[in-house]
Amino acid sequence: MVTNIILGFLAIIVVLAWFGGVRVVNQIERGVVFRFGRVQKEVRQPGLTFLIPLVDRMTKVNTQIVTMPVPTQEGITRDNVSVRVDAVAYFKVQDPVRAAVGVQNYLFAVEQVAQTSLRSIIGKSDLDDLLSNREELNKGLALMIDSPALGWGIHIDRVEIKDVTLPETMKRSVARQAEAERERRARVITADGEFRAAQKLADASAIMASTPSALQLRLLQTVVEVAAEKTSTLVMPLPVELLRFFDRPAQDSSASATSEVPVQTETAAPRPEPSDELTAPQPASPDELTAPQPASPDELTAPRSTPHDELTELLGPRDAARRPGS
Image (cartoon, rainbow, N blue to C red; front, side, top):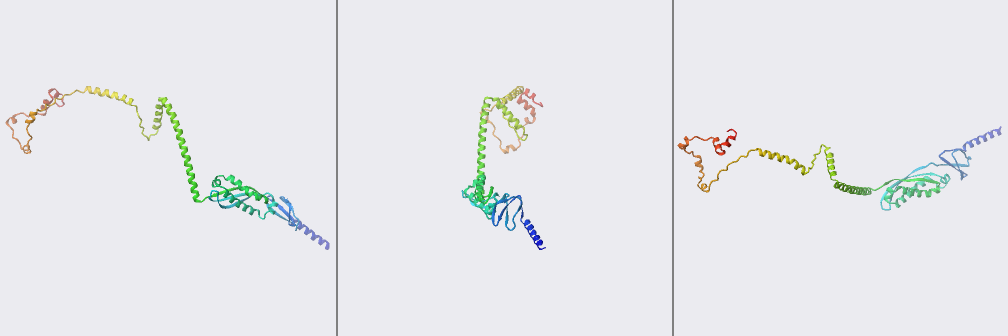
């Protein structure tokens, strides 16, 4: 009876020990077994594995790619510019035994190596390289981090520089430099365009000089293009020969009208002789002009002349008959 109890107790212990030594390794992990404190060369693969109770101890190591941001590092470039640079590193465990035995904490170790390597890259590079030639810097940074990480069983997949922060004064200087470069390119392009346009105009002038009709056609085409816009006023020059052509009918019509109009001759009044001027009566004084003169008997009895009689005496009887109202 006692023997059966002891055997049953031992069976229970064996079963518990059996189940206590069973471990499950995930697909993304690898198991490193320590037996009596000594690491085993065989790495436990994903699945169900058995450990000897109270003898074996297993450490699981993640074999996925780890994304580690590198903190922002401030440094001075080779051309004495103060910058702040941050990066990101991608790595994974290639040898689980080395990662578990060769380094205490491989994540912290890789982070510190990445920071020191980034500072070294900043000091060896120029500002232009940090801004435009990042591919070469990324390769150099990955190589610098990968050299010590190989001893820890870590493989550096890639390292990339994320951002480069410049001081405000340097940003303004870079902006002015970029603006000056754009202005220089714009002036070169404008000068090149004017040079080509001048060449084309010279060729066109040579063609028009050899063919005068081409100039007239070009003038008419320009007139048509300008006339399409109703908001503009077109002032078109005309040849002098065309104006002379329109001037001839006007001269002929004026000559015919002149031949039809009768010529009237006027008799000039005889000029007074010097003796008459000397004997001419002197102008009267203001009192004489205002005082009424008495009329003589002959003036009272003589008939008064009308305006028609005075006109007849001046023009003659024939011309007076032609005047209207005669």
